[in-house]
Image (cartoon, rainbow, N blue to C red; front, side, top):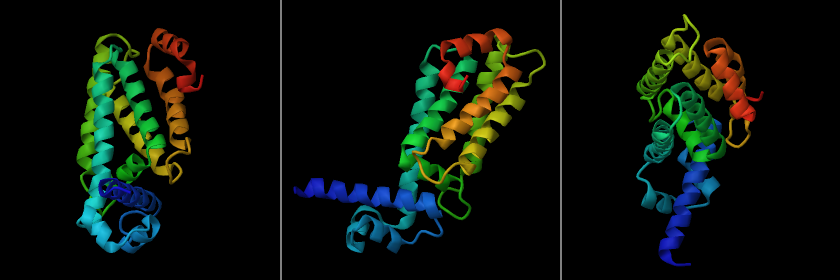
Length: 211
């Protein structure tokens, strides 16, 4: 096996093993020895790729952030109304975490006390702010029911998604998170969106919200 390919395989084994253990146990309870055992690499091979367990955890957090940022860029460029953009963006987030073990672990690490991801509060405020701006635009366009406060809706959605992630199964791939987000939409959207928007949305993709 060529050396470059072997190094890539080793690095991928380390990252995947760490993602699974961090997702299962958290940063503090996952020792370097566990990662070495699960990835079947030597300590020397580990330190060739990562200077520390903290650096490996940061790698997973950065991977998650890149995924979320790409989703935001894609959805904000798409020609959708702002309320639909919110729904599709959040569904993309849920799909990313459902399908990508590295992203799933990175999000857990981002919010773990005492770990490398103690900037969760700043990230959460920024994300809720993005939702608020989109929902404010939706209100200006007449897509929200009269009296609905865009900030309140943004707070409910942001907290609901974070809560759904927290109580979902401890590994990616279960589909549990996506199902919880779909249930969130079925409860929230009929109460905040105009009847016309909700009817059109269901008709355009009923499977998206489990209708």
